[in-house]
Length: 212
Image 1 (cartoon, helix red, strand yellow):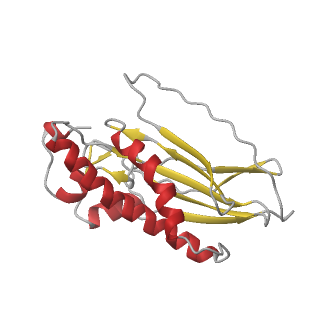
Image 2 (tube, helix red, strand yellow):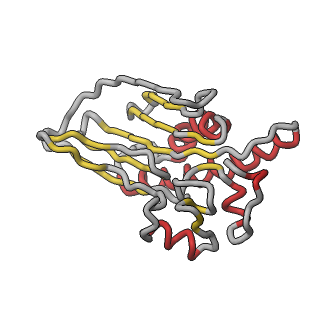
């Protein structure tokens, strides 16, 4: 699950943000993705995108809890950048554990849910000209700077061509497997919140009832 974090700084020290949002349901029957735009009481804007799959339960839960969990854990002075990055990692792990319990309760009520979601978050200190990005999965953050596109996130996904990459090797080392160019024969993203059947079963092959 652990997200990848990237710190960036503006050479002009200060910058202003303008926000626009566009969503597309694609060919799905219902929207499974969520986003969050929020300015916290500490004056740090938070932006998040959560690309859900196998339903919207995981993405909706992450929207409601990841930002809140991060700022509840964050130091009040908000000046220790490395601490903020580690706090975001802690928040991802905490929300993933909380979602597991949330999903189990939903199943007890008769909901057949095996949902998961990627996550990419941006936190900025605009007055000081710095920010950081954290991502788990294959949702991306990019920075357009001086005519160039700079990646601020790292894809956590399988290589559909079958050529091994670091994430695929990591999954296999933890007891997972690759099948038909997908992790455990089902997923492209190799990290995220939810998908607990894959995390719990690992080397146990999933039957069709767990297909996502």
